[in-house]
Length: 546
Image: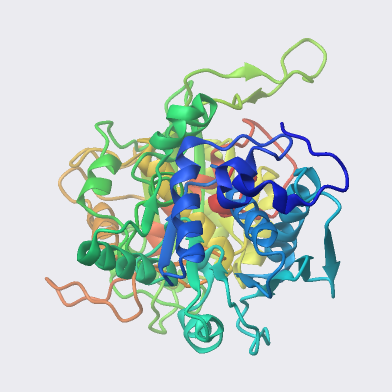
């Protein structure tokens, strides 16, 4: 840490104003990492030599990208304090991203002995050192930012979340008057983001003149200098899987497809188990149950999928519909389970999934009803629940499903209502992929579905005739996803409306897949009765761990 006598003209220390690495060494509590040095020096050189280059810097989450930005900004403000230098920094949102960026810059300015006490803040979004200024602006679509000028540097932070239209129309012209250097900071996401577009342009420019413009870092690069970071990422891989889109993009800087088939052959292989289906519960096993509810005015398309031949005609409605109520039963396999520390007297508390447990979920049975009246459906579900005694029951409580969910809760209590919204379904999809990628979701082996041996459960398909399982895999084959632009990481997924089986021409739906995906809501639930709650799943990328 270098200190300077109060009142000295900082321009007397020219080496510190020409070398950003030397400048950063004057910041208390900050040590520049080796991998941060290369992009910092390249950007500063472009500014100093007025090259007008465009850089793309992809860093994994929590690897020092934001701190590097603040050091760059503080250096340029101090370096050009005697000039009318203007820097513009655009973030996807004002709150919290622009506010966080301003706090980081303040911290650097306060802790660097070269500039301490020489900076001021104007109009709540401008920082000034001498004559040099930096403007912090929001890149939200509705933000009015036309008119700002970036004569020295234009930064776009989290560029994967700034719309291309907003950038091209309102942000890019800010650098036009002086052909200012541009930097696009971010973390990899899909192939149709602003960041991906600018990365492709930067790499093409590199091929033409050999000057590096793209700086792409992975978790492995960070781990060489920060072993603790490597340990954290290994934990994320264990939890989500190496090929999970979140892990690939957020930690290994791999661009993912924005749309396509959700369950490729590799994922389908991971889903296939070796265990047999079950017609009835096995003593000593724990079970979970998930139910995707259809409206009761939706009727059967195929009588073979109405839950078996035992159904009465008057239980089913006759209006044609598109969805069915689907039920999936899982055998919950725990590596170990520990007594609840606050169990009742006698020490027999309900058993809990340990926080670090890797429970797996094996599909052992499924049922489907199309167009059935909810009164009859409730009776049939009750019979199945009474037989299997599941630890938890996850029920689609969206719309008309709320009534059925309430009835089930009043009778069984261990019911978890799940309300579908665009964000909750997105989070459900991400969580389901995490279970699959870590090998913790398994379908029963082909040809093992036996007819139930008890009248409490409706007759189902036999060993050689398993139409529900075939229907499930058809739905899996046709399930698509589409990742929306913006910071929400919203994934729309499912079988598109109107899809038909290319082999038979029959309509395809996704009720069996949705029922299966609801299993992700069991992953951290205690084993035994519990207080009901409406689940509000979070996108993994918005969790505090990222």
